[in-house]
Image 1 (tube, helix red, strand yellow):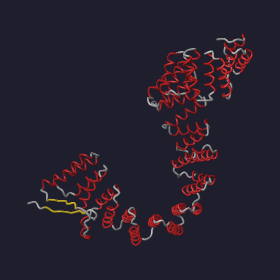
Image 2: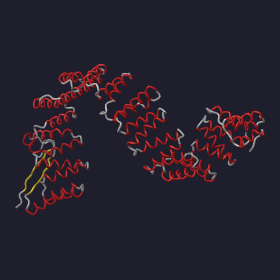
Image 3: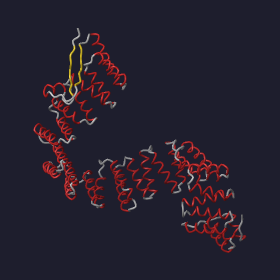
Image 4: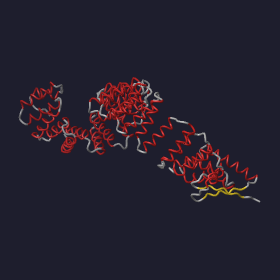
Length: 578
């Protein structure tokens, strides 16, 4: 004959213990019915349970759950299976099922500390503070010497704005364990929450006097003063802390924040320098502070501050690539490209696996027209990152500028195979192909490449200008070339090269008066008048009948460095040569 028994867990009370003590039923009861097991069922339960534990260990949670559920089918009051199953549900964020099962478990076995801890975690996750408080009562009952349970209970009460009840818990802590910094900090939070920062400050002032070596109290006190609008008092407290520990980075950073709030950037910078000299201050915090100056780089002081702080960081952290990388970023923003490259290279010696640094190095190589360096650096970068289209693009520019257009095209094809989404990069790739194919006099392929570039980015002024210019040199599709050239000027007004291109196309269309207007604009826009523009100027003047001025401009073009046979022939024969 099987004999049954019933265990009841009431919502809002604390299992059977609380029922006996308080007799408070706040909602519907959960009823767990158990039974006496036969020897065969008992053996099967053990087997299923340990199989479930094994599956849980190997992260096969579905099979583990199946086993634990089978245990509960045979033995409905098996609290261990309830706990394990509740744990699985909790890790999978199935909090309703987890709560139901673990509440059943504490009903069956209210003396198990682990069960109550899991229930507490579930209520924390679901923000159920009302149910969390009685759970901590149970944990306090089971572990009365554990101070943390009292603090957790008080926090749960505070989150319900039950300040008086939380204060009572803190008073109990003091009676049981005496005063402590944690207790003082907790009481300060209550005072601040009650809008009594003065009393909170008084509590901290006592701690500062009783324990002057604990800088955390100074920092907390300064924060309360600052929030109360007493910035000068906050600084005075931190200055005392700095006297106690002059090299403390946290104190110096706090002082810097206060000086910055008072619009005293020079004073803030002095504090930052001291903090940055501390190798124990996390380098990520230093990098974050340095980067915060970037939006202010229009101000020379901000640039100078960032430069010096980055330099200190590099000296303080000589084994961390981040230090040299951020210093390189600062120098790059200051347009000190050679120095930036030197810092980037130091970072790469320490860690060559950071793609962004390689890209910056190549960008500097191209900007400074150091194409041999770009080829060397590009090959080194591609050996590590062979699937990065921008690296092929930068390398192709270097090869093209070095006259190796076949190699440039090969690299651009690799880039095109890799890049299929970024329209700007795709446009640059095919525009570069257009340039190199044109240099190799493979004009049909050049035109096709330019068309692909414009399909990706119809308003790329560089592509429009180059395509138009090369068409005009060949005397092909001049009307189309004129439209593209005019559009490039609209997109990039004041560009001397684009204005020269438009002037030359108008010249080829025999619109000499219009061509004169644009060549003179180009010469005004350009910082330095180049030989090509001077020769074009002479050509236009010649067809406008001003042959003496035409000869003068051709002569200037030769003096500016042009050594073409055609130009010499124009000068010698004093006439335009097609």
